[in-house]
Image (cartoon, rainbow, N blue to C red; front, side):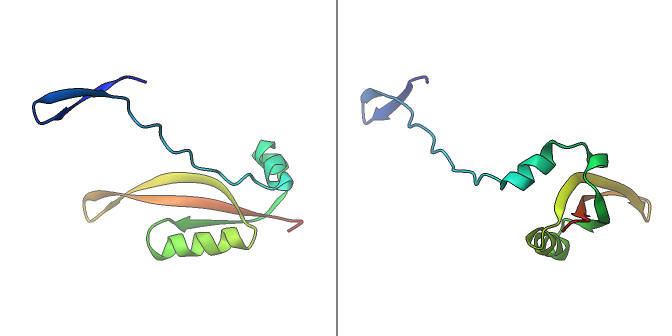
Length: 99
């Protein structure tokens, strides 16, 4: 950590930067962490779906995740519309056969 200088009126004071707050991340359930370490072809996916991650699509994706679907991949779809190139964030989700 470095030291920054702060000026109060005509007096210069040395001040240490405040430590950053650490955010606690919820640990995945054991089954989720096991799934995360398997190659995609070993996951036994029974159903796949792709969704736009903008506005309503994001709500749909969140609902699917709550239902037990797995987020497999996020990518940017690039396409041309009326002579203009556009980009749209997309997600691929999968549902395990056992779920």
